[in-house]
Image (cartoon, rainbow, N blue to C red; front, side):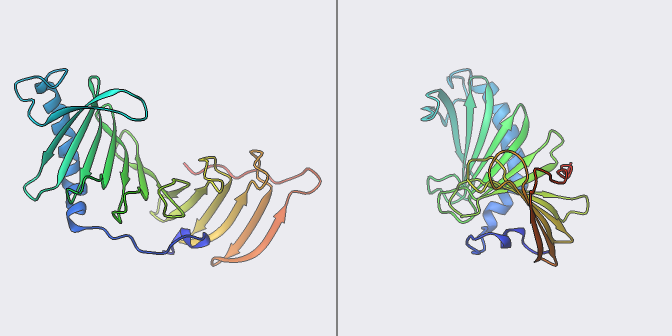
Amino acid sequence: MSDPSRGHRHSSRRPRVSKTEVVIASVGLVLSVVAGVVAYERVGLYGDGPFSYGYRHVTDPETGKVLLVHESRTANGEVIRRVIDGTRLTEVRLDVDASGRDHTRVIVEGKDIAVIERDRDGDGKPDSWEYYDANKKLIKVGFALASDGVLNAWAYRGSDGEIARVDVSTRRDKVVDRWEYYEKGQLARVDEDTDHDGKVDRWSTYDGGILMDTSTTMGGRRPPDPPPIR
């Protein structure tokens, strides 16, 4: 399968994924979330219960909220931080090398994992975002085309597991204005909203990833937008 990001100008550097991170993300992640919920019930509302060791209060710099954070270490020295807002566990953060930077950030809604944000190359900036539904099924994967931590593209897979569509926010404002469609791993069509009015006005077709034809809106008429992939 070809990489859908080849059609964009961004670094082709292959992310470095440590063995430790893979182990924690695949095995320990769910256990950490469950443990966070159970531990919270034991420490009391303000972290003053009989099992409150490792808890501290921090102020969220963005919202000003006072949050309860529990920090623990594994036998290998990895740091797990559980963030509690009021009465809810909202995040689990994984620091795989105890550097003080969160390599993986898990956003929790209720008792379900909603988003997993990863910094795979350890540069302190997230480079991938995984979105899950209530059934723990992966919905889409977001990434930063410029490898700078700014989320501006989202990839969807079809029923066959292959990349089927990539949505892009070319202005990096999270408003999608470019839609790339793939067939058997190859770029097949690109729809674009070049004037950013919410309507597609340029269509390009590809054969094997090679541009074959481009058309634009003329006379106020345009073909209907393709239905979204579910």
